[in-house]
Image (cartoon, rainbow, N blue to C red):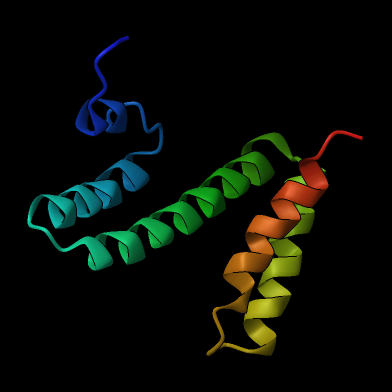
Amino acid sequence: MSDFSIEMASDKIIDARSRKYFEEVLQSCNTGCFRSAVVMLWSVVVCDLLFKLDELSTAYGDAIAQSILKDIEKLRISNPKSPDWEWALVEQINKKNATP
């Protein structure tokens, strides 16, 4: 069995912005603020997904990424105070990238 460290694993986060945000999650955990860590972790996951979709869309012209971003933007605009788009983002990524 190999040793695992969440701090060492966090070094493998590719996007520098996501890695920086994840540092806040670690800080919250290290100070015992676990509820805060969970909330921040969700935000990091959502941001990282958006960052990845944006890169796929702009750098590679990925049609699926563009479609997801377009759909999510519609949801965000239609109800700007609702966080429902966050879960819709996860669901769409899962649905549109699932193998038949």
